[in-house]
Length: 249
Ligand code: ATP
Image (cartoon, rainbow, N blue to C red; front, side, top):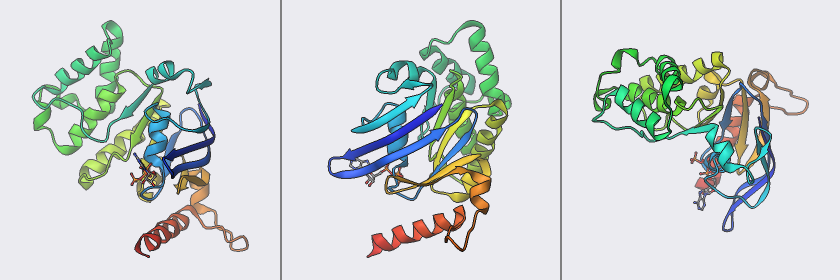
């Protein structure tokens, strides 16, 4: 569904992604795990056509991203990190407003609304003003808005930054429940435990390069003393520590 080959991105002289290769299949909840500055946001921005790149190829739905950006974007949603909703409108009014912008009408609107509401467990708060919702409910409304156009790929860029543990768990549960629907999700985080909770596959990235990628369960257990292969958790702890020491030096 997504194939990235030899992707290279520089911000002036700063390398953000270097000879970056990755494959993501349909229906997978894919975690992009990396310490600060690893290149996660840059990658998500490129995949959403928000940031240009210098070298390499990105194919989504079998189409070149550079040549078919508009068609690809119609089939994907990036759920914004900050809340994009109207506090003075009710939950239902917000959903209708954002559906209207996207010209979703008739029976499609009905079906998509029902789906977005039930996945995000918003049935009981539909008549409530968005400004009166709890933090977790607001985040779920944000996701519901993102689901209105039934995207084939849903991107989340560190959606739990700066929120309380309860809201964080609510978001993780909601995203995890999308697995049953065969939804493809790309989820970035620098928390190992989040990736463990919701993802099927993952990649660790650091300094713009893929360090390891594959099936999450396999990577969590693979340890080989003879080749000094660390399991995913130990590898991530080591990378984070090395980066911290580099920053402190
Ligand atoms: P974080 O978890 O801290 O958000 P990240 O993994 O999302 O980090 P990016 O934001 O993609 O990482 O940054 C990758 C590298 O590119 C970093 O070295 C960063 O300083 C640099 N970078 C990102 N955006 C810009 C920009 N607009 N101009 C210059 N350099 C940038």
